[in-house]
Length: 331
Ligand SMILES: [Fe+2]
Image (cartoon, rainbow, N blue to C red; front, side, top):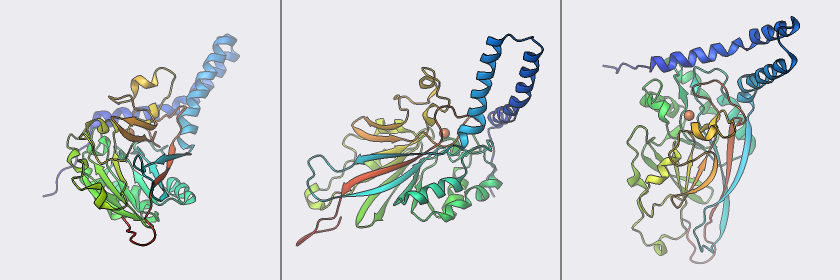
């Protein structure tokens, strides 16, 4: 018998309220102007009120649709490595949050921007949904079929119903159907030209079942391994890096979850980011590991992004290249 799916209805209710209440912006402007014209509002108060309304308009109606691209160079060659090096590129996006908020960044726009960047692989760091209904899955994620690069993804806390519909299997099945490789506590090997990448996807640790054993130090003698093979980890929440086993094989972890604060008001935003280890956005060295946190493209709780527009990250990774000449081997 099919499992009955259910949503976190109270959380969804408030998201609906916030989304539709945001259209009250227009009557608020009309009211404000009429108060001002009638003389009921002094000029300084009017200026402050207009300023607040302008900022809220920008955060609700403009910034969520302003897609930015950020390029970051990251060296993943081991310390002391003197062999050949090559560059590969990965597009990273996260926290698309398709569902109740209809002003989120369309997947088609992300796909087109990625196409222009000519990357080798695409990494998706989870939280694809925000109370997306089960009958909307395929219609929402069909665009994944048009990506030309290998797409590898993990799910996030919202995809596990924390909060949202509790349907991780259904989300994974839908996006897999459009060619996305979902790595929920799984590792795979992806060839990019002559380079081979190990990629591990960890289950979100809010779901409590991340398998850190997949990142245990290798027992192989490094000298017998030939060209070192870079190991990428996709973990929705960067805090996971603090739970890796000592000497873990992770060369780079890519994450999302923070939304860069989403409403990035000075001094306040750091207090609202859901992180135990002060992650925000960009590149970190955490617990001895390189961790890159994307500020995401979507929204949670309020349909607003302020001073942290949706971001597509392009990571240019310097990795060990295949050895050349007599006796060479390709990793
Ligand atoms: Fe999120």
